[in-house]
View (cartoon, rainbow, N blue to C red):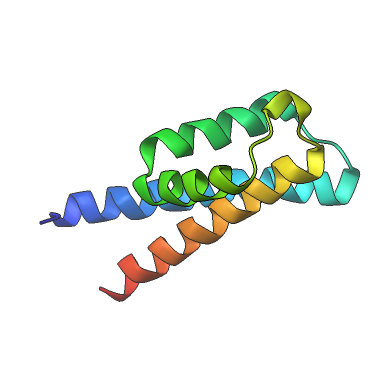
Length: 97
């Protein structure tokens, strides 16, 4: 069971991860610029630390797997957006509990 400190840390961590992804996605949509290394690093970090993201990613990779170096900017941004959606759902659930 989470203590109130763990709960706040969970919420703060989720918000931080969401904001980081929103910034990368927004910069890409506004300016057409993607820091591929940063985006890929964020994707890989979350795949490792978040079991739900790992589960969805594993299912998606079973259908289609493209190495990051071959992925288009749009594919990388789409994965960031997918991760952001998962994180937002988790944040919403935490805030309701």
